[in-house]
Length: 72
Image (tube, rainbow, N blue to C red; front, side, top):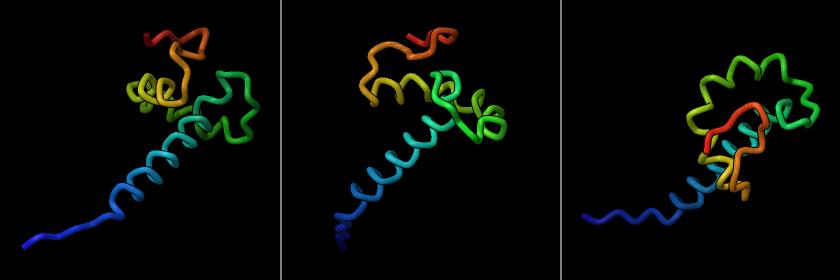
């Protein structure tokens, strides 16, 4: 039996876009963008550091945008 799910790619792309926005919110204060939720997102930074490199490359930044954090 064959099951075709053409919507899986669209759902995966939407999830990736949502994750990218979330990463921007978490690391925005370190990049100089005012973040009203920085107090709440600060504790999430250590959890997301391992995914940071993939994110900034996908966003078109070949090097880390953070002066104090080098991942490349």
